[in-house]
Amino acid sequence: MFDYLIVGSGFFGAVCAYELKKKGKKVLVLEKREHIGGNAFTRDNHGIQVHEYGAHIFHTNDKAIWDYVNDLVPFNRFTNSPLAMHKGKLYNLPFNMNTFNQLWGVITPDEAKAKIAEQRSEMENIKPSNLEEQAISLVGRDMYETLIKGYTEKQWGRPADELPAFIINRLPVRFTYDNNYFSDKYQGIPIGGYTKLFDVLLGGIEVRLNCDYLSDRDNYNKLADNIIYTGPIDSYFNYEYGELEYRSLKFKHSILPTANFQGNAVINYTEKDVDFTRIIEHKHFDFTDAEHTVITHEYPADWKLGDEPFYPINDDKNMKLFKKYRSLAKMEKGMIFGGRLSEYKYYDMHQVIRSALNTIGKIG
Ligand code: FAD
Ligand code: UDP
Image 1 (cartoon, rainbow, N blue to C red):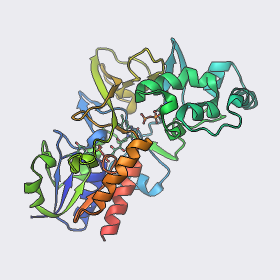
Image 2 (tube, rainbow, N blue to C red; image 1 turned 120 degrees about the vertical axis):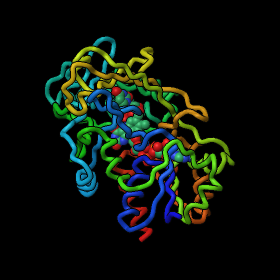
Image 3 (cartoon, helix red, strand yellow; image 1 turned 90 degrees about the vertical axis):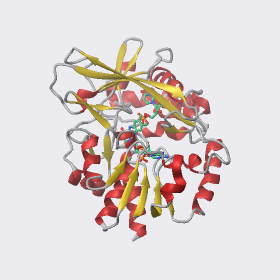
Image 4 (cartoon, rainbow, N blue to C red; image 1 turned 30 degrees about the horizontal axis):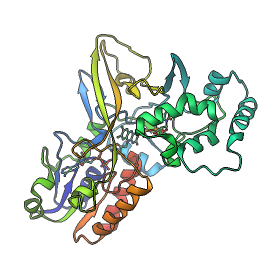
């Protein structure tokens, strides 16, 4: 009945669906949630676009990807400049001259470099092998203790010296007074929210919501010769080798009768004993003028089977397990596995889109 069955309507599934439709293929999308868009989904709340699964800011250096998404829907000029709250004091992020000034009172880049060099000396001759060592060797112990350690340990639910170093390399360290969280050339948010973009990607395509492919896979398999699967890879194989681990999140959304709650889209709370990691105020993502506001407290959470799998835990143990599943996946005829959950990868949106386009490109 269909050329392709696509499991999941997040960026990977939706871009594949859009590209296949352009090639004249008949596509069916199954989505187990009650909405499209995966974790990038935004829900309208009286004119405010709420990022239901956490703040999503589109940023990329890949001009072709930036042009691709802007051809779908217009983007605004949002630039992510989060603040970090620690013991009642606000700091700018990412680590830049403003942060160094707030922490140490230094004014010039040379003063900041000298201070960091002094702080880094404890890491001399040590090759960083975990997040704690990597963070101290990047910005020194003061910054680590104030802005990184507490946030990281509550976010990931384990000590920073047991976490892979690469996680912290996502954050830039700059010697300019520039609070832009990302260093990419292009950045913004779809005007009117991400769901508008997914409406375009999935326009004219049959999408069945509230449908879990795995609950009836024998019947769904009969509908198409080819399947693109974007769910968790271990679930596809019935956890044959065991469960891959994730970190989960809980979101508490609140509507408040005030026009401006915190004056910024994102404020991180870096102390370990504050139990949430950030407060998001959604109207600042798209400069909405409304009399009310919607805020979200983001709480990190342990993950167990059945919870939403948000962040893959790419440590050695889980990567070994993932590779076993990947070998099984390679042997599955007519199946393509892609996206954050199937590739068990800490992908950003632009990377997932690139990966989906490459996948469809290979199909020909
Ligand atoms: P998903 O969005 O997870 O989509 C997979 C879909 O498959 C889901 O809708 C799921 O319900 C569905 N599905 C799974 N199993 C089944 C099944 N058995 N049957 C039917 N449907 C199924 N990226 C950025 O670029 N910038 C950011 O600022 C950013 N912030 C983030 C913040 C948070 C809190 C998180 C968790 C991620 C963030 N990301 C960000 C990453 C971004 O969310 C992902 O790159 C993107 O959503 C991945 O798309 P995907 O299609 O691979 O997966
Ligand atoms: N991080 C931190 N303090 C902060 C913000 C981030 O220590 O105020 C660390 C933390 O370990 C986090 C990592 O940097 O997991 C990457 O941050 P990013 O904002 O990229 O996380 P994500 O957007 O994936 O939640």
